Image (cartoon, rainbow, N blue to C red; front, side, top):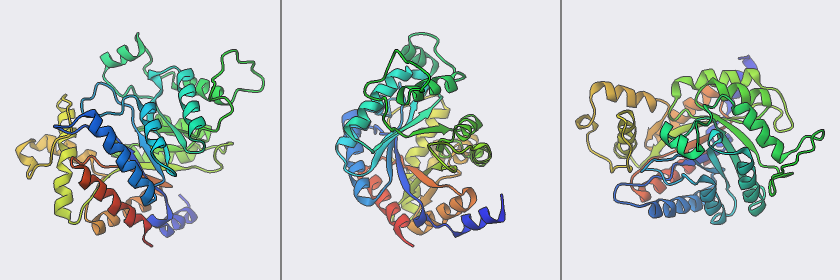
Amino acid sequence: MSDKDLNNKEARQLSDIPVSILDLAPITAGGTATDSLRNTLDLAQHADEWGYNRYWLAEHHNMPGIASSATSVVIGHVAAGTKRIRVGSGGIMLPNHSPLVIAEQFGTLESLFPGRIDLGLGRAPGSDQLTSQALRRGPGSNGQDFPERLRELRDYFNPPATSAMRVRAIPGEGLNVPIWLLGSSGFSADLSGRLGLPFAFASHFAPEYLLPALDIYRSQFRPSETLEKPYAMIGVSVIVADSDEEALRLATSQEQQFLNLIRGRTGPLQPPVDNMDTLWNAQEKAIVRSKFSYGAVGSPDTVRKVLESHLLETGADEIIVSAQVYDHQARLHSYELLADIFSKK
């Protein structure tokens, strides 16, 4: 990194970059998918008022604690209930779908909500192997053909001048739907850099690969019609409360969720507990804490300092935040406090 780049990173403040939301549409213990989707819209409407840049939803299947499996449907629900904020996918798992279907779905969304739709794409299945087979009605893809599927998808939006495509995406063709590549390793970092696309890294669950992936993306970047220079967004798990103690207690819900995941169990988001040491062993604690090492949990002052450090270290152009909080009002309060952190000089 050059001295100029370092100086530019040092000069930037949280108020200089956009902040966005990644909503996993959590289904809480004792709640339903209806409750989850109602809360999703409520949070999106508040985020619209608080100045958040984007509101993304993620594709997961066969997960009793996540309500956004029909991701494009939920995106339409959120976009219809908001006014300004960009709405999109973080992400759509391209191996699960025909590129034509995705082009048509997001072409439809862009036609309904012009200038407000993002298409973030991942190459993971977003589910277990059995569910992947059920989605694809066959062995499907292991993600290695992702570049070819991506090329086909982009061609539906912008058919090559030398190609007489006999299958067209209507709506979709000719529409400007921004495509992002999402990743938790170097694969999508390299591909998005070579294609000149914006890149979002899932540092909220793969923090150990964040800096290497950003280096790959920036070193491989080639200017394109989409971007003149790299644009990297990092995903961070953030929970803000009035005190460090309350935020740490709220964070035990997401710690329980990840603990269950490494134990091979899934389920609704659980209420917070006073002491996680009654639930995990030392090895499990180390694994869970390592996955949240790039998170920020605490009072506004604590979270501000952590995020400022992340911004200095990564030079991120945007931060997208996930907060798995059991109580909806506490989740709203967390995002309201966070919006205030980003708005202050």
